[in-house]
Image (cartoon, rainbow, N blue to C red; front, side, top):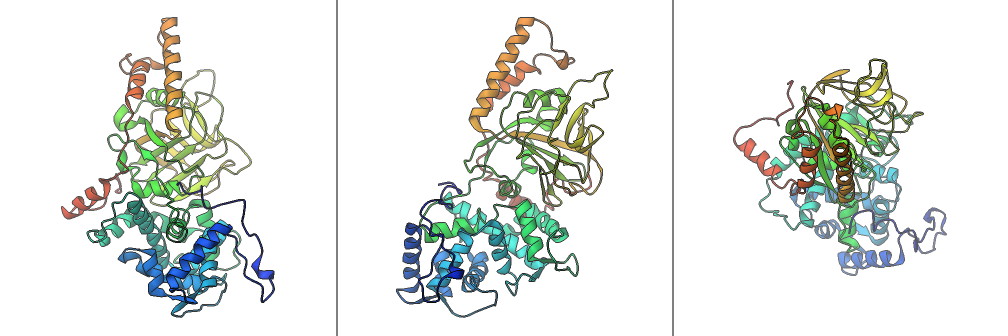
Length: 501
């Protein structure tokens, strides 16, 4: 089962607030009756039928690999304190603590889930608790390794004894954790009354707000999966999209970055194939080819840019792309940066200028030629010129949440890749649209002026042939980590594309 299909049952929940219950009344929980019965059975197995279970029994039931044993200890302590802000340590976990802890992870609102996760790494669960940069890094790395382990377990490829854990930590840290930590430590809470001493410290309010904006499914892809599998005996998963790759695209969207995007996007959890609609390294830096790759595709689209400085950023547009002199798009669209910092900027401003794409130069109009996101015709939030060579990225507009995509205003483009994320139905619809377009051109017997300078072997017919032929996708990046290990063994340094360019 896919995550999101089993963790929120509207019917059958015992929605009774335990805070106002009588002292001697039986505790009430937010679980459906069958879920509660399953959890009670699980606890009886943990405790051997006794009133409490030990930390070792709890950790053993989680079945985590060695790098995550300390996370198991933290989770045990968090369950002990699930109903209290005061730290309470001891060797045993009672049934009510077990149920309250599981309830907090599986049934609480997202903001409370993030506060619970934060409390596992803080000395206290009180609102004013703070943690330093090293603990923020450990918290996110534990989540990443937990995702990795659960994904391997789902694919029955968990070779625990052979795993190079130190290199695995280094891989995840280099690919995405450092970007997430940099973003978190700079994030300023808009609601917290606590004053941070420095950017080396973050508080619960700041982390909770950051995670809600940038990684809303962080726990859903990790802790929720773990507890649901272990204690509810429900084989749920957090599937990554099935991403097609062509030359060079692995460097822009590897497994860690794909995970970071997946926990930010508010999409259903079906593992739809993501098909390459355009790649500058594969198709050349031609705006016409870019347009022909995207136009007619009715599903959501992911556009990723890599700059000459190694920055990786882009946009996710939840609308069909078209050639227009006006803005268009819909809610669900967002801008993002993945490297060197991870930031997600959702659309929730006063305007709805989600995306702009104009391929036609008009001598009587000052409408620019290129691709833009947010802002207005004179000042786009993110802009790619019609030559696909340079662009600009601003920090504020009236469509997307404010914040920097890049450290500098302008950038030079190394790569642009666009994936269609709508699955097979969207692929089929685009093929039909392209066939219809080609037939209309054939009937009119005249060259589409937009394709001037390109032969029909590189124009619509070739795009149609390419599109029909592109049916494969990568095998979930199985070779990525192996390639990383080989590079390290050979004395290689950081991944390509992280230098100054």
